[in-house]
Image 1 (tube, rainbow, N blue to C red):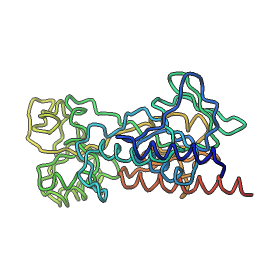
Image 2: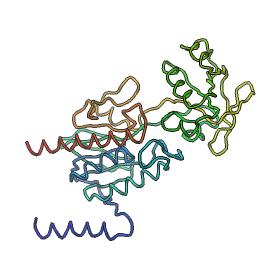
Image 3: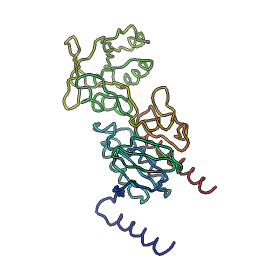
Image 4: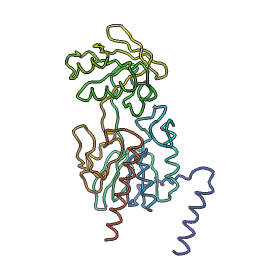
Length: 333
C-alpha cells in the first residue's frame, strides 16, 4: 500500500465518519460514464440493496440505478421481518440505503433503466435521461407493477386495507369482517389461509356464478358466504374500507378485502437481453438467483411469487454471494 493510496482512502473514511449525515457517493453525470463496474444493480429497494451490501463488503465496484418508485409506496406498515416488524416500508429502505452507503465502492444513480445491450466488456445499460453505464455483470432487482382492478376506490385502498397477502397483512385484520375478491385454481387454498385469521369471510365473485367455482362445496362447508355481484365502488376513509357498493346499488360493510391482482414486470430489459420468463410472468431463475443468460441475476419480486421483505433481502444476499464468487474465480483462474 503506497502513501497516496492511504491518504486517498483515509480521507474517504474520515469524511464518512465525520459527516453529520450519511455520505452518499453519487456520480458526475456531465458526460456518459465510461467506468466499467463489476456489477450494475437495477433497482434499489430491499433486494437490490441487500445484493449491494454483500458486494460492497467484498470490495466490488457497484452501481445501483433506482427510479424511487417501489410497489409498496403507500403501504403504511411492513410486517413479518425480524427487527423491523411494523415499521413503514420507506423507513426500512432508508435505513438500508444509509447502511449500504457506508461502503465506498458502491455508487447510486437516480434514474430509470430503459435499455440494455451486451458488449465486449459485459453489458451496457441506458437510462431514460440518456445516460449510459457499463458493467461485467447485472443484477435485476426491478420489482413488478400491479395492475389495479377497475373499481372506484380500489387503488386508493391498495396496500392499506385492500391487501394481497395474509402473511404480510393478515394479523392486523384478524377477526375483522373480510371480503375476498378472487377466483382461479388457488382460491380454496387462499381462502383457507384467511379463514384461519377470521371467521367472518365473504367471497365476492364479481358477477360470476358461484357454481362455476371449483370447490364450492368446500367453501359452503366452511361457512364462507358468497356474493354473486359485481363491485362498482369501495367506500373508504383514507384507504381504509368502510363499505363495498355493488352494481345493483346495494352495499355491505367490510373492514378489509383480499384481492390478488395481475402484474407485469417493472423493467423489460431482462427479456430484451434474452432472459426466459415463467408461465406466470416472472423471471426464470435457478437456485442461485441466476437467470437463463450468463452473468445476469434476478432478485426480489420480479422472480419470486412470494412477495415479502425478508425473502427479497435473502435473495439479494444470495445473488451477491454468487456474483462475487464468479468475479473472484474469473480473476483468480
